[in-house]
Image 1 (cartoon, rainbow, N blue to C red):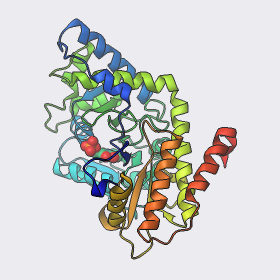
Image 2: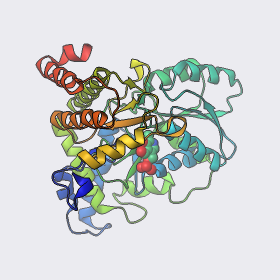
Image 3: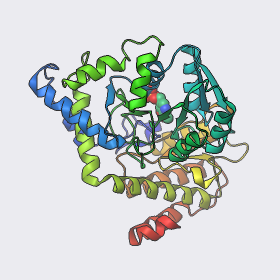
Image 4: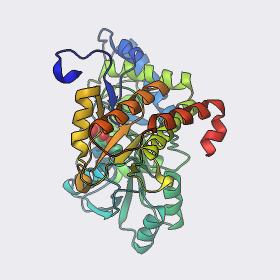
Length: 402
Ligand code: PLP
């Protein structure tokens, strides 16, 4: 047990919803000498990743790659498209939506927040109603998270696009896919998204420190008129240099080697298989939670996240104590809880380079930790997850429809 020993045997169970465990193949791809970032070898690498990443966002438009965490790509999306005082419509799905809204306010934008109780995703009808009220078209962008990592709720982006269209509103659509990209279906072009924000450290299985803006023609046109100050984040310099297969500054070369490997790995497995795998883990986890007699934070099955499940503890039980006990005894990490629900729930991440047995190991650790912490649960969560996984292997279509 890690508590009483200087060394912990075996692999740590990193069940936070990102950063996710690094596959050995990606580690090996990054373990390579530094190359000249203006030389011919780099040009090949740059072309490979700049083209390859488009297949992950499902776009034929440019994707900007930043040497920054996801927060940087949030800022880039806002400062490249908007001007001081612009109204932006955002949805309070949880902690990360709140952080993005706070950033918009700090940048001099005028965010309007559609509030929720943090137990649901973004409602297309609520967005449509707000846009219909805005007869003067003062709202310049609708900003939503595809997956709210803090609560485990996934929002229907295609439906949100349709809602914007129904309202006949010209606002840009900016979508954060930091904890959904490369884990669940996402279609930048087909869904009419103007800027998609992505991050490296979740479905892409890379270390933290790289993030993305996938663009639309409309977003590029908006960037020509946007007046918020920008330098490092400027799309213009990036687009110009990327065309010539390099970057305006020194890129994170070794991360790009890792990105090339990640893109290959996702296509070798097949994106649809990757998505089905994540759905299987998510459903197995939810079945375990229900079998324990605990409540899933996401209230409506329509919004269930394929990458993270937040679990509410009964009144009087402290989720932070449970996390610390589980770490001490079973060397497993869960995501913490936030804001108005701090201490009341914990999050099981089930994304990235993970498999059925890892998920079952994590659920076994969770069942034991809950028991050890004195949380009143029924036994049988792991069994319910195993039963589901067996049925999903036996008949994937039936299991998906259940
Ligand atoms: N958006 C979402 C949905 C996230 O989950 C996170 C981080 O987990 C962020 C934004 C911020 O990204 P980063 O921590 O990489 O800056």
